[in-house]
Image (cartoon, rainbow, N blue to C red; front, side):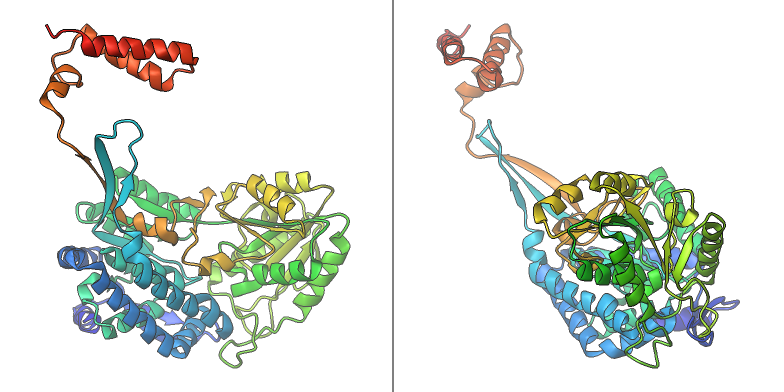
Length: 536
């Protein structure tokens, strides 16, 4: 069991630990072992051995374990959500709705559909009907999941569930700010009957994970990283040196376009949720708004009124708290710097813009106008409770401004005209574009999640995301035995001849050349002439 593994690791001499403090009140809430690279390599070897048997386990049996885990998670939802809020600082409602319940959904989806998703897929052969092809899927092996602190449960647990049902084993390296919830997840998998070697938590510094990839390359088959673009580039570079496949879900500076015909009540409420959910610490947060000049003032007024009425407080004291604490002190310093830079360049703060008296890690939700592209909070990821709103003259201007970014994770369009909204959405350079809503699709296991440009590569979630956790092997086979006369006279094997050259040239001319029917009949004549020609 993982608990026994932890006891062994903690009992070892000179054991280093990671102390965990709640951002809500600064109190220490636990500690976890800090694994060395050698200990992580030992875990990798155990996982590789266990994975061989797990890969041969029928998908239906794997699905039973995932279903049990999902039911246990639902039964223990309040306990899990409370730990998330305590460790991360987000409102309890968001811990339920953004972290726990989407995983219950995801477990049910893949437990019911994984066998169908991973079923061999036939490939229709267009011309050479005497042969057929199909793709079959086999697990990759051992996946290293490196997870962030902003969604310390739903992001890694989704990856764990998908890997396990695909037949892989997982090493999970949680963020050092929020490792406790990873061990709670491990305990639920223990209770669901999963072999402990198939999912091992290796808490430790980020550098340990990079060294593990470097040294464990022969046994490591895939890396799933979620975090900042800067660190993601380093991890991807290590993977690249060893040709280890990886997916990178990185930063975002996600725009929302508010068209002149938008439903402003809906747009304002959705944008406020999209900007200030998890205190703005979401890679898909609304971090830039481009509002059409005709509705700009009305939209800004509605947003400010909503933001002023948000309830900020200790998430453990009330389920009605809507804005909690920030998680990372380093991130708090970043948003303070960005705000000072913007103030020096003429930004106006309509509400918020300062630390809250609730505590050191509480920062008020902030709405800003008179923003320009020269300000860091418009160009660079904020990952905090900021909502800069900019006025545009036309939809074309909004599209150009939205695409003027190194990032491309998500984007949002608000319009009553569905056709127009789709036209705009299809021109935006983002992995996911939502119309008249924000954030929601990460809770849909059916939909892919991932970015373009420097927001990452690869996809998680979706049927294709599950298949990507497997090797796709191609099988090609004959449907009927090839008659000896046929392969001796017509087939592509040796001996080569000018007659064969003429045959295949005529054949492909018949199939592909944009000939008139008269010319096609001439090609058929050439084929018949060759087929009836006496054998030498």
